Image (cartoon, rainbow, N blue to C red; front, side, top):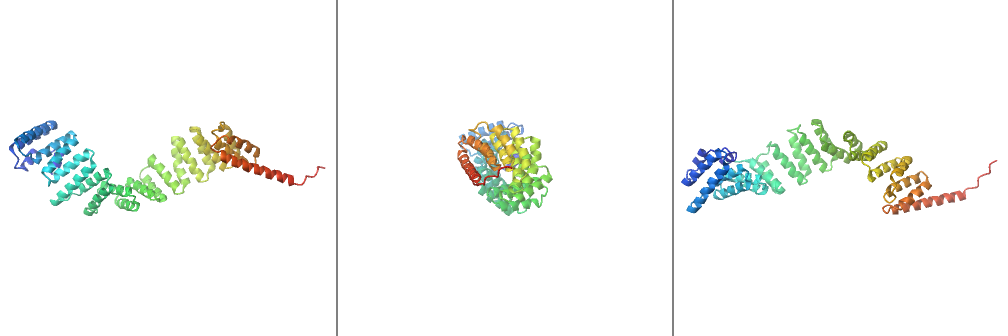
Amino acid sequence: MFLVALLAGAWGAGVALAAVPDLPPGAHKALFAAQQAADAGQDARAVEILDTYRKEAAALGEDVPALVFLVQGAAEFRRGRMDAAAKAFADGARLAPQDPDVRLNLGLALLAGDKPGPAAEAFEAAFGLYRDRGQVKPELLYRAAVGHYQAEATARARQALESLWALRPKETEEAWHRLWIQVLCDGREWKAAERAVAGRLEVRRDDRKLWEILAQVRANDGRYAEAASALEVADALAPLERRDVLLLVDLYAAADAPLRAAALLEPLAAREQSAELYDRLARLLEQGRRLPEAQAHARKALALRPGPARVLTLGRLLAAAGDHDALRALCREHARNDAKAGELLLLTAVSAIQTQAWGEARELLHRALSDPSVRPQAAAWRAVLDDLDATRREAQAAAPPSAPAS
């Protein structure tokens, strides 16, 4: 394939010129000189020679052969001037519209120049022209699919890949299958994507990346427990990276297995000493009703990075455990500014009501009323407290007098 070899820098002038016997003398001379310059690594000089020839040919009214544009395009490609290379190849394609090599090289230059959509069109044209010559090149359909996909024309990428599978239903090029799976995922065709991954796993059972992809597909389909199982297999093949460990934690949490998620997260949190990870760990253990452990991790998060949200998290855990003394101490330490501590004051007041420490509750509710964000709730709980007081007084009034002590 002359032009593919040319792009690789392996063009031999003898073979190329012999393949085009009807070259005008001026073109023959220019191409020979350009080839010598290219062989010496002087692609800029090769382009200069061919530019000069084209100007001379235009002045003489002489047609410029397509081969001149193709050789110039190859030289520009090697120089990294992709726009110039693509223009030269496009000019060559207009002069030689039935030459598949021209279209292939045009596609390569366009793709390298970050023009994936037009590159895909060129690759599809090259595929058709090769096929007309009895040369079927499936890899060009893959190149076209890549270009369409990069240009966000997913439907056209899918069409190209479907044509590829029709040609080579048992093709084993891994990149082709990975793109097919990605296209299915982008279309939210989770079942089809899972079948595609499963097909690859039949021949590449130890491919860790495929297991990770299977996990993601199942997760997107809402099958969290099955997704976690796939990711566990990936972990058995090679230890998961931090990102994937966190994904596995999330999968188990979504699958209603918070304690399994916590067991995975705890070593990572301890190793990194991260307040954010301790936050997550506390939430998971709370969901699993392991309140003392949840409190311990909430305290670690608060100690590492103090903040109102972490204070409230610990407060809620203490309230859920019925530990009013610890909650009172937390409130005493952190609820110094009534205008910003309403939630914690309210939480502690409710706990005090539940433990029948009504005088303490009334004081806390009075302070909570200073925070507009919880004022309605504080007023409602104060009304509850008033009713409780009234009920107590009525009960005391109705009680028979106690007998005097003898």
